[in-house]
Length: 77
Ligand code: SF4
Image 1 (cartoon, helix red, strand yellow):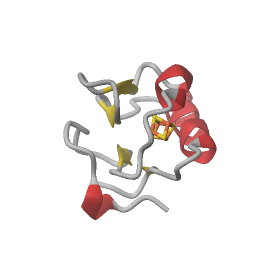
Image 2 (tube, rainbow, N blue to C red; image 1 turned 45 degrees about the vertical axis):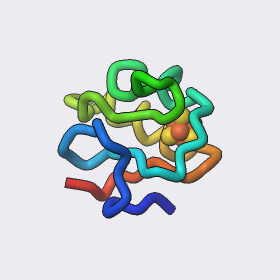
Image 3 (cartoon, protein in one colour; image 1 turned 135 degrees about the vertical axis):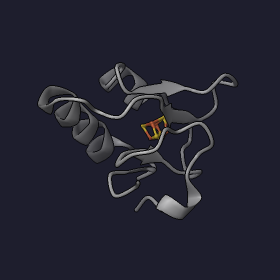
Image 4 (tube, protein in one colour; image 1 turned 180 degrees about the vertical axis):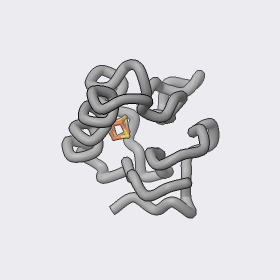
């Protein structure tokens, strides 16, 4: 389970975040490209924009549920 106290640097403030357990597989950036992207080094994902509507929230939830490292949380701030 993702830990909001261990957020990846670069994730914007809000509910969704990536923690440092991310293994850089890229799945979330493909699933929810309006909200997740890989960092400049390409090794960790970040949330660059929080979901702004139901559709975006749904794909963010989908990415969270499918993350192989359980590195995505939705209880951040
Ligand atoms: S799906 Fe999970 S492990 Fe893969 S890049 Fe996204 S946060 Fe990292």
